[in-house]
Length: 62
Image 1 (cartoon, helix red, strand yellow):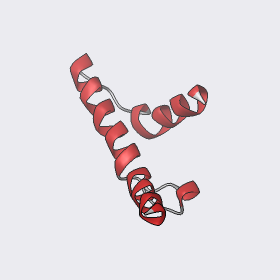
Image 2 (cartoon, rainbow, N blue to C red; image 1 turned 180 degrees about the vertical axis):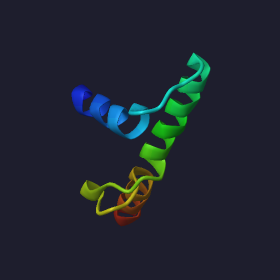
Image 3 (tube, one colour; image 1 turned 90 degrees about the vertical axis):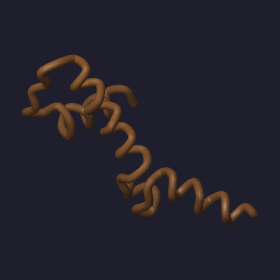
């Protein structure tokens, strides 16, 4: 699982990008992880973001 995560980071975030400072890299990484977990649609989740999928699943339970 870690290898797949690093591959995604390399191909979608880091590839071809030069960061001038470590802080810039940290901010970009934080923004990317936030986008990946909260906004990006995932095919395995019926093309919903993880947050939307969780909310949908919780509504089905109630």
